[in-house]
Length: 135
Image (cartoon, rainbow, N blue to C red; front, side):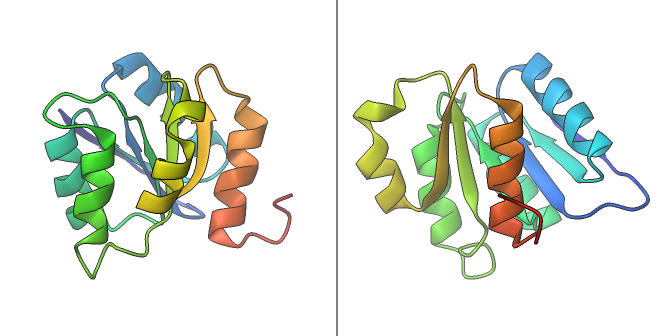
């Protein structure tokens, strides 16, 4: 399932990849409220296709996805010169402490386990975008 939502004064485009539609909607709503543009993908294949099409500034990536694991998505993105530099922030219900080193080596910029602190996630997005007021 592909959805795209935009705002007029978007700071940056964030691709939200999660198989849970409620998570996609909630994150999309909150990010748009912060002035970001949001694009969405609900599975691994759509994630790679949307990344190609939308060329987002940051990707929020769940690991447990239909049609391929989030780690596979990161591998595919890193293999594409036009997409390899996009920061990927992992947001997953998995126990990330078990995969931390592997995910960081695969290119994850930050890791968040659900439920996560939204302000911390927002700060991580800001850091990846080089926003001056991001802590």
